[in-house]
Length: 355
Image (cartoon, rainbow, N blue to C red):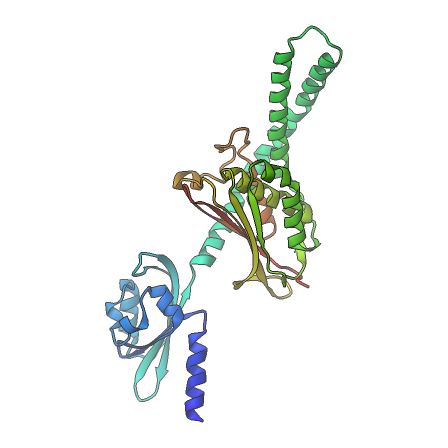
């Protein structure tokens, strides 16, 4: 019976999402899989080694040194850690005493890196609101006279008045472009609240894909769908979400060379929980990956800067709008890109009211 209980306890520790180290004095006598992943070393290389020999911060080691004979608890927040392979983490570390004949300690290690990124993205929202006010003022001041100019030029063309047709086409083309910029500014700065209704995220993605069929065929880009068909419907604004996903998929197709590939996948992210007013809910992860030209680190830093674009005919407002829609839904997004390897946009949305 005792043997069975021991097995179940170790099995539980092995499957915890937290890293667990058990220390006898300062020696590591137990380590679970999550700790191996964070430290970047196998347990064979860690067991029986001193906690002081690991790559933890001086602050963490000093904290343990002061605690280890006291039987007190402690917690360190947002500790920077770089593992054996150079991967950077932000860790929360709990020191939990286990008192029998001696005072030993459990170290519970929480990988806070992902949630820290969520916090960072949320803080960007205040800057977006400031820009929105400016954009709205600019848009309304310019849009009306632009309509008059465009209408006048089209009338001149229709009545065949003496005006060079080539020059006329250039003027109309430029006016269309300015109007497109203004419309995107209005979309971005629109203060309307999210009009939530129950949506099927796969239907919205499919609608975007169908709308972009001609562009994909033109570039001979193949689109692959890897959907988690068990995803429930949840509350979101279908129209703004469609426009945002359309933008991202369009960017992915345009980034591909001839015969490129775009993979669109969905899944539930069990590592994140959104605290709603009624209950905590999971996030859905939507990933749109292409094998296109990718972006440099410098360009990636500027991707949410209004008017920044390297695309011919682009306004530099598409991804700014995408970010706004995602933040309006209490979500966040991450972008990974590498020159010549492609780009992956990961969008995380809380599945509020999931059915």
